[in-house]
Image 1: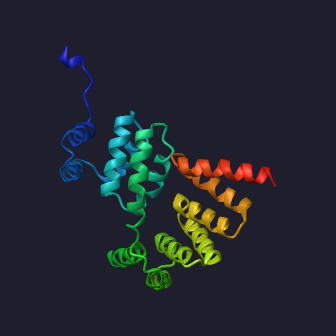
Image 2: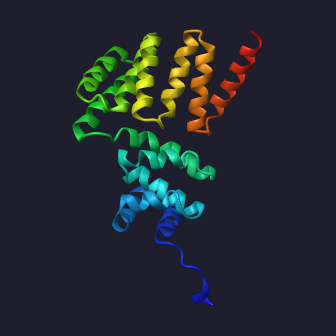
Image 3: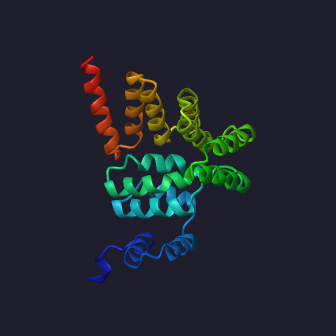
Length: 220
């Protein structure tokens, strides 16, 4: 009888142990001992939902920017659990682009934005962008700072650049929509919100915003 039972993959066993113990450090160490990132990326798009959930969670801890497309596709997974795990993890993946020095400097920009020092954030992001124009998250962080300083046109431009560099960056699409709302361009705002929702269907608040804008435009 035992021989006929299906064998549970090691990754699933590690994931179940994590769910019971909630010890993320142990989960990361254990997965890293047995799995390489390319294997996890393959498993994130194959197998049953538990395998996909485990792989996406592991990539969120262990993956770098090279798994961005894998995580972006996971946002559209048929399983809601996979989608939610991917949504929580992909933002960290975006910050892992470039060398360690670039990532540390981005952390400074994020902190400036987080504590409301938007002038300092915009200046620090500008310097980082000049040195690393391919760094999508630097453009996004500057867009956030510019938006808070009511520079909506410039913020929208940075959101657009973010999306050109990282087509899975749904917050940039939403941010651009917010810029167009401030500029009273409801048609462009609606287009941006639709783009964000297409990238990440879990965004119920954006779905509601789309319905509101559609009704507003129909009433004009």
